[in-house]
Length: 377
Image 1: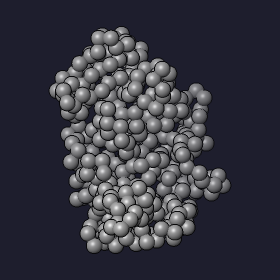
Image 2: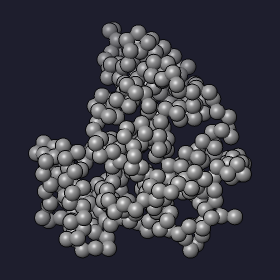
Image 3: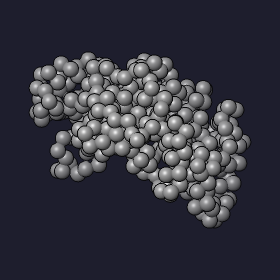
């Protein structure tokens, strides 16, 4: 049996989970939405800062640094991509680290002098970045010159031998796990069923509702073991089957979330990062919100339909268009290159997004919004 809900109610449920209105810290946000993806593109603002700003209007960059370095409420590792995760999830990263360690065991053995050198230096000197290993050993090319050292740091990071202690600018500073992890963090290795239940519950609680395919986004897990873990969660009442819309597509939801009285009724406008948790799964976005979106910065210029870095615009529970924009921090100008309203006239769209656009410009270090006259509309 599955509980039937409408597409509209599903959207409200999703938005209420993805944009919690009572969070006051980065740690709370990351804990509720499950992860925040890290990305290097800064044409507007780096993805992790933009995602957090969309949920914490008092957000500033130092809040992320404080959560990572001082509060230790989050840590950096891998979700479906590089991400900040709640520290309570640390133990569930151990299976991936074990796999990675086995995969690169031969490489680490062949490069054991380099690995030992890096570990010894970090133990003695504290957090170091790849640039701290630049240069060549006197008398010839050393095995700790920049390129192999950087590779070794990444291997050690993914294998769990090192953690990212902080980011300075965008450079990662690595340290030993025992110096980074808070005492409260569990390091108990989860068995397979524990791990799968964690994946399932995290996905449905942070997303509101999710299909099995969406829960396993970019993960490869044995179908039988996944089904067994899911069935146990359903039998215990932690997970509820939900059929959405006229097509009654089967989704999973948490019992707690479905019983929550709050559903998003806000008409607030949000200009989102292309890497926002809400839109990262494009198929889910299309099926549940009827919104087709693609990021074209990786597409050759002549094949782009909309622009290099178009930002989706959400109003309440509906997407109302896109804005292609760029922050010119040297001139403190926020350029709106093109605007693409959906379901409304351009004038109405501009009135709807104006305040949020100014706020985003300010967050990106600009004090003036400039619309390119030749921009497509």
